[in-house]
Image: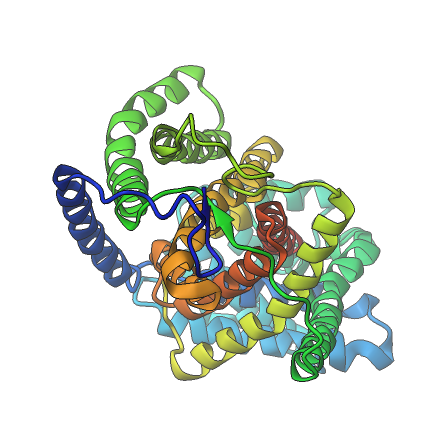
Length: 472
């Protein structure tokens, strides 16, 4: 057993590893560094979900604006929500290096027409151009808009069907092809849209205020030297070479390189034979691949842990789930405290780097998926599988082993840095590092890995919930 609060226990640190293991760890580390540097550079070319989220929030504000009480409109939806949406949509279309999608061009044209004199609706140059560029299946909607004659609700649905139109486009088409008063989507769902708008505006603000208050309280207690002492930092009796093999070799080389090559082709073939819907296939593929990725490092960890050495109370990883109430409350408080710091770091990055790119592809999948089973797969991956696996590696193993040589604070910083880099996103590096600091601090100061897992799951849950509210 190793006591990792700066001093070894009586049994002392683990014996020096054999030469072959050190050489294998060095090779794994070199491969890991090459893969991570390449992944970070490649992240600059990956699309960012930030623009999509910004556009969805403005669309939600425009849809819900009529349901917002007059006095709250400037705060919740803005003075001119549709004009704000037009400006953001124009900016994104102009900044994009790819040709704009016909659906986005249609949305912009409809928004501009909604601010135009109704007598001039048929003179939309953008719609006339779009009518000559879309396929024959989608052209009837544009022709109906240019014609301007009222149509009934059933005919509108038929015209919109080939477009797979989001709610904002459905609302604008309903307004510009009136036929059945009072049946437009925004009117039908006014209460639901208002609650969603409150959830993505007021709720985050309240959480940020609570987090700032808790941070100030924590700072006051630290200044007054009233913070309780951290418990002994216990962890598995592994050497730095073992941890390098586990993370660089097991997690990166085996899990992220070898496992997809071996598992993905037969998995995709099996999903094709099942003839599952595309979205569900994506969800199952993400879940199974992540579970397979976990298998290699977790099996390696199981082989590394000694079987005859007595384990400390709570086990090598110090889960300490009980009492559950205190584990959850510690996770919630730590989440609230880290939230304003992560938000501030994201704001600074956004001010100096307008388009960092490199968002997690899972975010876009959640934002655009409408399949409940696919969303359930994404949710289970993000809220259960990922927190358990990542916390075992970074806070269950790396942090306590590093704490033997670096002390608690140094180990928290190191584990946060590795955690942030492992997500392979330069644009999200700073926010992920701050989140890693919060998770590591909680693990160190509470002595409970279970609380860190719960905090990680709560963080992912907040992100997932926000994506669901903004999804169409």
